[in-house]
Length: 101
Image (cartoon, rainbow, N blue to C red):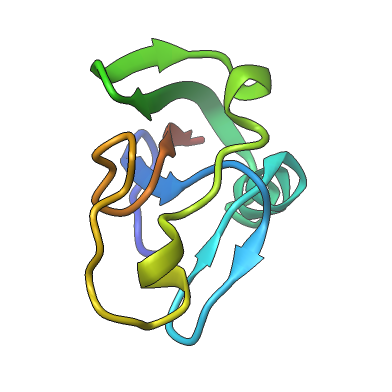
């Protein structure tokens, strides 16, 4: 309703194993599909996935990200503790571009 025809929505969410936290959630493939479908009729939908490891961020497939989990100390609401891979928050993200009809 907010976008005019041809307008684009850019959606970036933490991605991997579905997890719910107090103020947000990490999307899995099923939840991401539901979010895209909730947008309604689209002229174009593109998805890109990025995964974090000790070497940094790299482009990946959804399947390569499906087991990724948010950092443990942040997910538990505790004090910051270094993660072995150096991750600060999400270990994978989905970047979606949806163009309205």
